[in-house]
Image 1: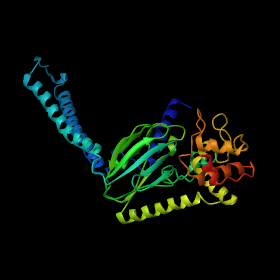
Image 2 (image 1 turned 90 degrees about the horizontal axis):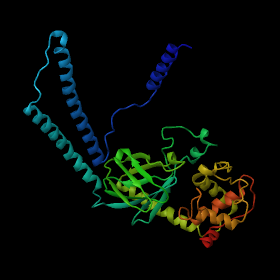
Image 3 (image 1 turned 120 degrees about the horizontal axis):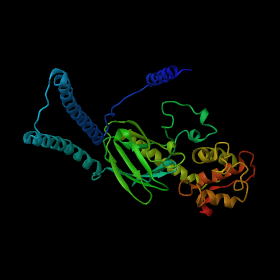
Image 4 (image 1 turned 180 degrees about the vertical axis):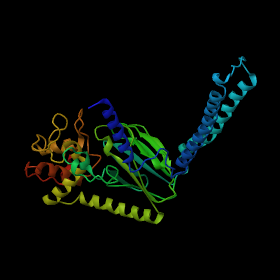
Length: 373
């Protein structure tokens, strides 16, 4: 194949790929919060200032090149300085910079002003999920990607690649419309970053440190974002979904969440059947464990140990419970004791000890987990 044909083919592929994009844009989206809209307005202001400057500068250059070219007999000027012009090209850029700095400073100060907030939510980053605590409301939950199997090499091919592929979660962060919500950001393990473009808000979540931010969304709807800090193997699998509800719908959601919390408390004190534990444990495993240990329990050799036929999952049950509760120091196995309630861990351990042919017959109850804590 000749070089010309290869080059033509390359340009053809580039053209086809460009035309095949369903949504293509070169500008920012207008914001939905006051300071994200402010940032958009500043961006547009600066862009048009640059456009005007570019037109003037390049227009003068092109005019000079064409009109004062040597072929037309133009003779170069002999002056070497002009005080008036030097003052002008110093003062005018200074005025332009001040004109851009004033609104930018105003927006930056507004972004950092978390005073007079109506409610506060603590956002904690985990590998690889988010935890939300509604301070003063006794509401807290983890937000996991709604298709955990997408992170598994064994099952990702079977996941539906729709418009919200890798962008939806099982539990959304829900806030009321037209309320100033203060967000407190931290992390449990490594540095994460909470980013929702529509809000113009991106804050690092750092272990042992608290960052602050706030949002006030005037329009109900669903807004999506992602972790924006490379935080490990499944960094691409910890999306953010914020649902903004009317005040009436938000009040109803708060009531439902408190009912869910009461049900979870009750479930931790009852005796479960093995079938119920296995059914619930399969869901917990898919959400919390499958990304590393794979949906089939076979793990990744040399990286994540297998649960299927594994020494821990078929050995001493007390050791198994300890590993899930407290993790394994010096490895990627994190502690789930603070992330799951007693019923979830009991179901998970029971499932792992009886799935994929392990068949230990062990049934772990929430009371066993409570005693082991």
